[in-house]
Length: 114
Image (cartoon, rainbow, N blue to C red; front, side):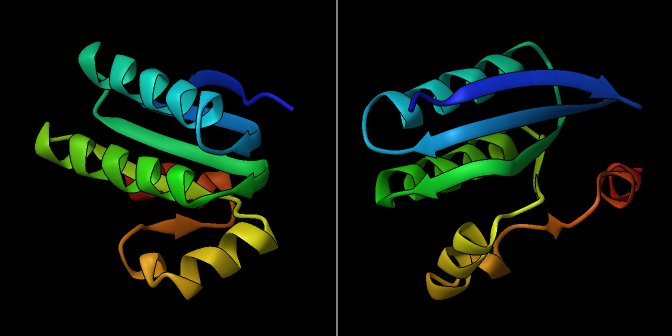
């Protein structure tokens, strides 16, 4: 299943909804390109909604970290929303849970950017 990406604007925050698998090859490249494009267009507040992501492999994790670093280097902020249990467990296992700001509901995530 290919990665589905949709983005929308909420109170000045770009919410990027991802669905499917973020894996080596197409999925991680699609996500990287989408996030780089947003940052290049001047988006500085990005919220990644991972609620529909069924699987992330090590390459996908690498892209998440890379996106976080790229955002930070360009004075942008990247936060995560609605992790599935699998993704949540993976981030805890790899200690990346301490790197990202993670939210369960969109309203509090949007409010955190203010």
